[in-house]
Length: 362
Image 1 (cartoon, rainbow, N blue to C red):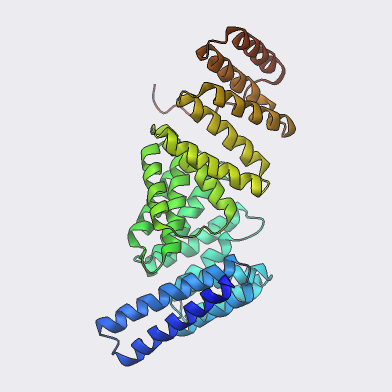
Image 2 (tube, rainbow, N blue to C red):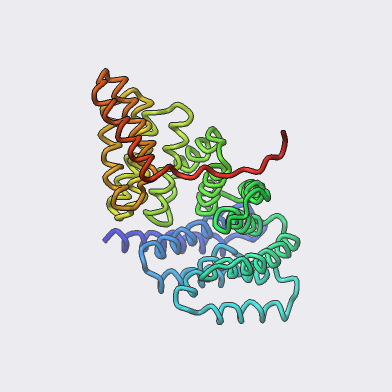
């Protein structure tokens, strides 16, 4: 019922904006505003249909947007994803290469080929190199478009985070590209890209190893935007990130709410490793709030899950923190027992590896 009501609303609103655009000349403010609202609602409708699994309808809506204005990159991106899900990679590539054969300066086709390369499965470093070549050309053709910068940022982030090319400055490059894209994006017309960029910036700053004040700011802006997440899993991971930022900046009550939201989603989606991490983060946050007994109960829950997930290397650190909680509660016997457990865990399983850093100064 709600889905059909939403579609009916979109149809009525879009027809209204179409009438306004026909009534006023393109140079008028009325036409300009109606065009912006038409694109905003069209993109929202198509994205909502895709989230709901209505892929055929979503594809139809994206094609209608391109009939209205074939330069709308958001529609090309959405259509590419939907066609890839149907196994049409070769068809997509042929289509955009034909456009380039006709016009080597075609920004849309150049960007689309770069974007397509980033969606290869399995993704290899060669795919990123090929994508980077296309996207750098796209940026040179249209530097004021946010999308070339956005996707280049994604390439640079993946080089460091997923392919392990650390200490080469790729995360810093990714952040610069994301910030440029964020500055160029029109949030009113395209809140989806705005939301994606805020999440990307959050993740990149966390991966860089800090900047929690900045991450907290990105999280608050993402929350104020109020735009739906692409998936519930992405929402859960983002809540974990925002919880960590809130805790690191001393906003412990807010952090607990965010962690609890992430935990609820992780359990619903049966994301067991995420559930374990959120429990551990929530337990540490409760320790920082001074709720030591609650913290230990949560840590016990995390330990039970670690045993199932072969995460034994984390046991010693958790048990040591639990011992400290017990000391703060005045439970000395319990603290001694937990310290003994931590010692046995360390002897049996060791501890998580500490990241290796290259010295740049002595």
